[in-house]
Length: 135
Figure 1 (tube, one colour):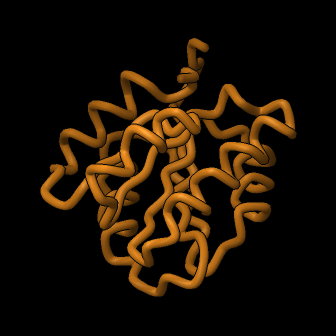
Figure 2 (cartoon, rainbow, N blue to C red):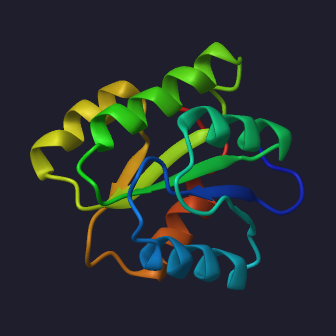
C-alpha cells in the first residue's frame, strides 16, 4: 500500500510491562524524522492497540515488549488486525526477544523485530520502507 501524506505509526506497550523508555526513544526518533506517531502509553491490551490503530488510520503498529510475553501479545495484535480487516497495517516490534522466537513471529505476521542494539536510524529507515505493507 502506498502511503499518501505522512506515515502514521502507533507505538504501543502491550501487557503488564512497565518499562517504556525504549518505546519513547523510538517514538521520538520516528516523530523527529517526520513520521506521525501515536503513543498509547503503558499497559495497553491488544484490543486497545488495534482499536487505536484503526481509529488513527495507522500505517504501522510498533510494539515494545520486555516482559517475555511477546509471542502471545504480538500474535493477538496480528490476529485482531486480520479479524478487523486491517491486515494492511504493518506490525513490527522490539524488546528482549530471543533469536529463536523470531522465525515464529515472522510466521505469525510480524514484519520485523528490532533487538537491543538496533539504532533509531535503522528503525526509521525500516519504517519508511515498510509501513503499510503486509508480510
